[in-house]
Amino acid sequence: MEWYDSLAKPGWTPSPTTIGLIWRILYPIIIVTFGFVFVQAIRRKVPWKVALPFAINLVANVIFTPIQFGLRNLPLASVDILIVWGTIIWMMVAIWRYYRWVAIAQVPYFVWVSLATVLQLSITWMNWGQ
Image 1: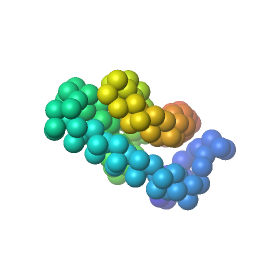
Image 2 (image 1 turned 90 degrees about the vertical axis):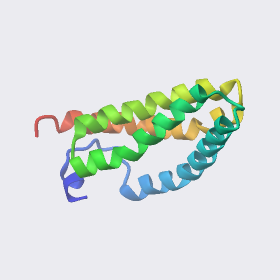
Image 3 (image 1 turned 45 degrees about the horizontal axis):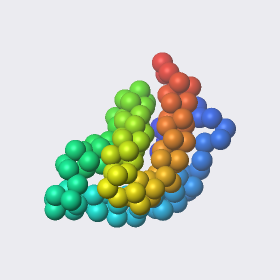
Image 4 (image 1 turned 120 degrees about the vertical axis):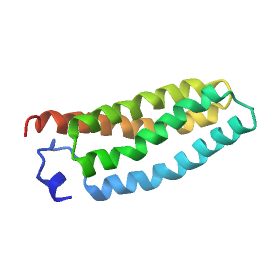
């Protein structure tokens, strides 16, 4: 955290406590909805191509922290969070015709990742070349 704390950040950056609270709310939604989609794909109730953006999103979400805080690579973390953001849209579109509730349940995740994406891109820009 020392490294992250030393970075230039916008004044509106949420506190680590707030970020942690938001993820504690979002992770159960993600676990339930992603698990549901994967089970439905295994049962062949939805095509695997519908589960694909969920899988990509899951991987991109999981690797963000190691990229950001392990590698300390802001540009790569920015690319990663853009993938997370884009796959949420893809997920919502892909699942809509099968299980609309799953798409609607992604709205809080999408809102948070939209904010986090702007934050990440801002931090990357403010610390470019340092």
